[in-house]
Length: 113
Length: 110
Image (tube, rainbow over all chains, first blue to last red; front, top):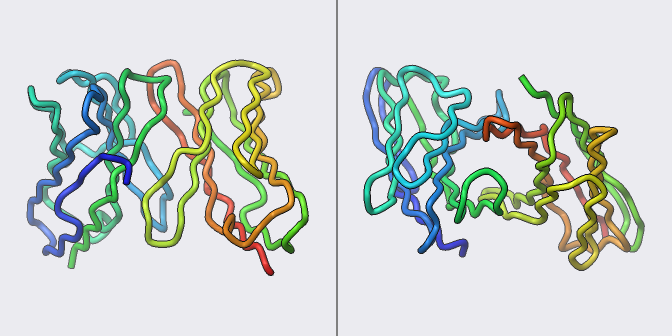
């Protein structure tokens, strides 16, 4: 158990819908990272927050957005969902940003029908 | 965009043998990460390599980084069945973005 929690574990929804994935980092960690894992595209870095501020943006679609709240938990919002958005979404956390070990949560499996 | 190439993509080996997984990347970086993923599970951090010549070892796994050659290796010594998993390398760039290799699926046969 990495200490990073993610909810929900599974999510099944329809095209065009909007969902929110939630992540709670390990106690004391200030950075949160979001990743997408799919068979087509492998593991992709989406976005990183440090202490509430966005610090790096990767291959995150404009339909996706994220934020980190004052209590350091983070949410990833996915809207206008398409079949191709079906994937595993992982959250990871680290104490600082950039060079620390990242601890991954169990992931949320999103299925878009 | 930084490219990360891992090879081999599949590796089937006998218990007790040694082998090396290679991770090449396209532009300068001094941040290299190795992860393990078991089927249906999340990623587990194995090593973080942050400087040229860095070498880290944990049990039967040893990772090294050559930033000049833009190459990291993950060496497996005397493989055991429990090491069967998919191994990913990831590289961080100067903008705090991270790029993953395609993964090496390792199957250690008893």
